[in-house]
Figure 1 (cartoon, rainbow, N blue to C red):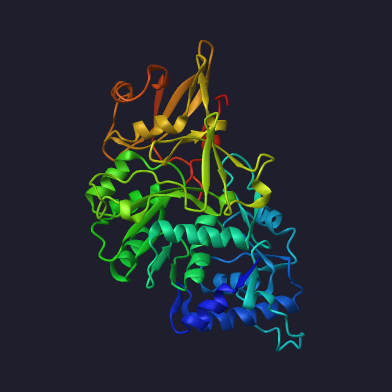
Figure 2 (figure 1 turned 45 degrees about the vertical axis):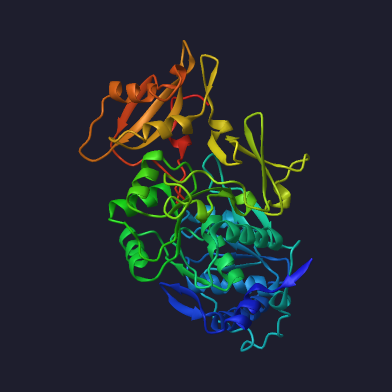
Amino acid sequence: MLVEGWLARAAAARPAHTALLAHDGACSYGELLEAASAGARELHARGARSGARVAIALPGGVGFAQALHACLLLGAVAVPVDVRAPAREQERLTASAAVVVDAPLGGTGERMGAARADLEGASRHDLEAPALVMHTSGTSGAPRPVELTYGNLLWSALGSAAALDREADERWLCAMPVCHVGGLSILVRSAIYATTAVVHERFEAQRVLDAVREQGITLVSLVATTLARLLDAGLARPPSLRCALTGGGPVPAALIARAVDAEVPLSLTYGLTEAGSQVTTTPVRALAHGGPAPGPPLPGPPLFCTRAEIADGEILVAGPTVAPGALQGDGWLHTGDLGRIDERGRLHVVGRRSEVIISGGENVAPGEVESVLEEHPDVLEAAVVGRADAQWGEAVTALVVARPGRAPSSQQLRAHCALALAPYKVPREIELRDGPLPRTRSGKLLRAQLTQGCVG
């Protein structure tokens, strides 16, 4: 199925509207289309063709957006690369690319005398064609490539818009890596919506706080750790913000309560690279401030075009947002995540199947125990792993980082857990750690780095 080209459509409808505001400049949709068209001709002159992979090793900003849309105009497959990854990792990610863009495109293709490129993506997109190759965040191994189609991206944008009630003058702040689907999707969706993306090269709490307070930001995408840093920096009652979309991993109940107390409109989301980002999202109309009933935001239902089911405790996902190559023979994406669906169709994520601890024959999901520990007022963050134990097979072990100036005892934390968890889920050992727990750039816990001497 062919649809109208996103960037060309946005430029025709709103040529003077700000498409992007970033550290390296700003541009309207008319200017972005002109720059991307010139960039596409340059890529063509360098050997890129429709269907070929083009690696983009640039930080988030105007230069990255130009290269991304140049690929889409040309029909090439964009492969965002983490510029902070070690050189060997970057070489692995770019190995299959016909062209590597590691400096802003100059749009010099025509001046070099190259034949004018056929910008087949300028006027239309084939929804079945590949648009991007994104790499998973690699919490349990090397990042895996996931090929997303134009259809995956379009349906994800439409589903997100339905959940978040898109506005014509949206200003969506991206302070997440654009090499990951959560950050990259903001650029794509903004082009589909013809709205404004505000892109920061990296997350800096004060800079994000200033933008939310002073730049008319209406949406911001966060993970639990960045939300906590913003609240610590003084985020409260943001004047224009209508939704802080928070996901990328579990969001502790205590952190949700802090956001609600600060009158920060919070929406919880669960997603995967293989599903084009969001799978479930709390609808804006259900938020605590403005929803039908007070209280903290709850997990959301699947996006309107997405289906989720539970099979043997595992979350399965299907629908037009799911990468074709990620579907198994039964037509479902087997996420490896554990969860349940409540009576109102809301998806509650418990943890990863591969991380389940088997203690005395009982299954323990680390994420469930971590959430309870992080509800304790003295706990900043927690990680739960299985440690080899002669009696139990695996002993539930918690690694806890206390809040500054606090020093909770193991007995206090165990007693706290016993109020909410079955006895076999209460950590048998609790260790206090001094520094922050290791996480990916997108905020996911690197549990594998904490399991030395553990099983599983």
